[in-house]
Amino acid sequence: MKLLKEFATFEYDKDEAKTSISEGKPLILKGILQRCDTINQNGRIYPRDILMRELENYNKLIREDRAFGELDHADSPIVNMKNLCHVIRKVWLEGNIVYGQVEILETPSGDIIKAVIKAGCRPGISSRALGSLKKEGDANIVQDDLQIICWDFVSEPSTPGAFMVTEGKEFNPDILTKVFTKSDRV
Picture 1 (cartoon, rainbow, N blue to C red):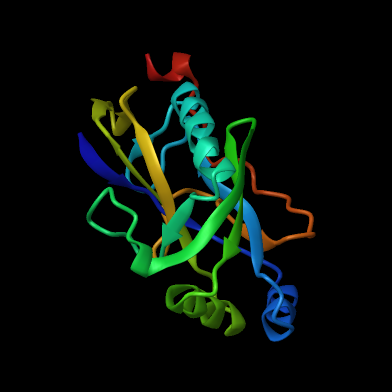
Picture 2: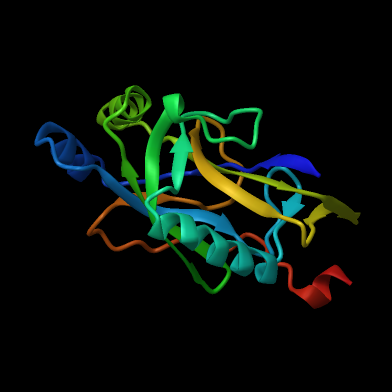
C-alpha cells in the first residue's frame, strides 16, 4: 500500500467569500473534490465503485463531525490536529463527479486559507488515501484496498476541472476531459 495524494483546484465566488470573511461568517466552499473513472495529472484513475464505497465510509466521519483536513499534505495517514484547516460537511456523487461542502475552521491553518481567498487566489484540494495501484497502459488504476483519509488544501492541483464555489452559488462544471469506463480499461 502507498500513500496516495491527488490534487484539484477550488474555484469560488471571490466577492461572496470576501464578504463572509469580513462579516465574520463561517466560510463555506463547495465544488468538485475528485472524479471517478478519469485519468488525473498523477496518471491515476479512481474506479467509480471504489470511490462510492469510500464516500459511504467517509460519511461516517462527517456524521461524527470528524472529517477534518489539513493545510498541505502530510507524509502520514494521520490527520494532525495542530494543522487542521477545515472540516468536510458533506460529500456526494453526481455521475462520475465527487462534490463536497467544506467549512474553513478558525485555526491558524484556516486563517491562511482565508488570507489566500481574501487575496482573490485559488487554493487546490487534494485527497489523501492509502491504497495500491495497478498499471494499465499509461494509467495507474487505484485498487480495491483504497482507504480515503481526508482532503487537504494544497497549492498544486491534479484532478481535472475540480472547482469550489462559495455556498449558495450555482456551479456548472466543465465537461470531463476524458472519461474511462470499465470497457475502456479492458
